[in-house]
Length: 132
Image (tube, rainbow, N blue to C red; front, side, top):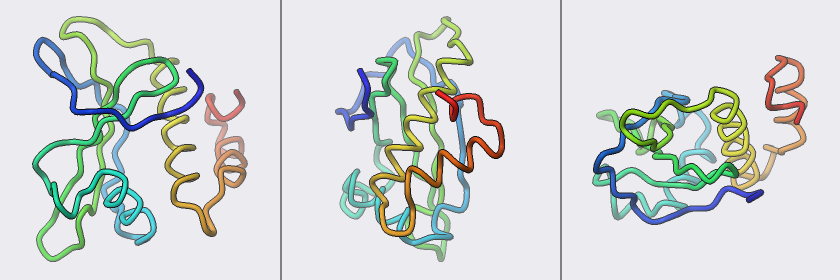
């Protein structure tokens, strides 16, 4: 599997959410907020459920959207892997999947935001997954 895809709500019975990444100021750039609102139908769903994607590793990820009074929704985002309750997740797999999710997000936002610029920034900061 090479791409990130939006998937249906996952059954979280006997599962846990393994924290991966948080962005608490998603609304700083409206394009990012609008991308998630459109992709996950957040105008209608609001805070009712997280969104879910499947990453290249095959692991499902929950995208929990954060709301704050007086700010456009969503104003933040938390990304967590959905894993079996007692199973660890390989840190390298988590990093590669998060990088793929970031690439998917940037590609979806478009405009001034490019995957090429993300990769350059990742390499500048020596993000391990940026070199793969």
